[in-house]
Image 1 (tube, rainbow, N blue to C red):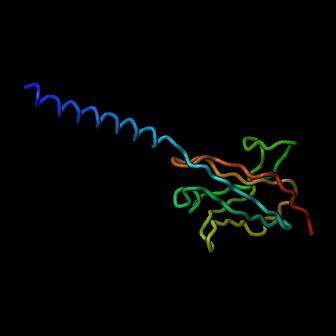
Image 2: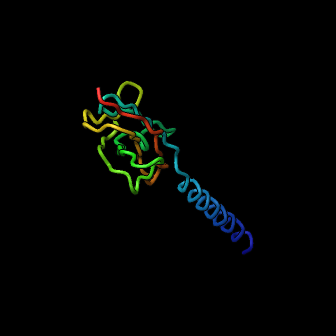
Image 3: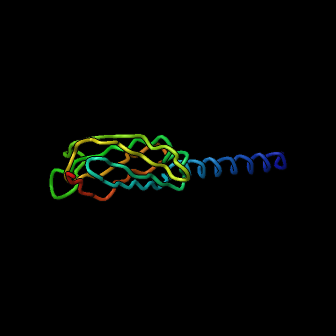
Length: 127
């Protein structure tokens, strides 16, 4: 009887370890990096990630007009958005001409698999 229980115990222990390892890996979010360029009210940039299929393709980018000295997405105005798509070997986004001038930045929110990121602040000036 003991000989039959040992292999079953080993299998149960291995399944338990694999389950815990699977949950640990599932909780790891991939890094994301969003960039922004401004040119006379046009905003564009890229999104990069070690997991581009999950964290860059079709990822929504929101552009904010910075009101104060520091970025604050909860207080700053959302002025544009776009969805990133593959262009060559990079995932790019572009809002087109928004008519917005001043300090702006781009943000991608956290998703099930990816970390959030915020770009640096850039200044859009009138031509």
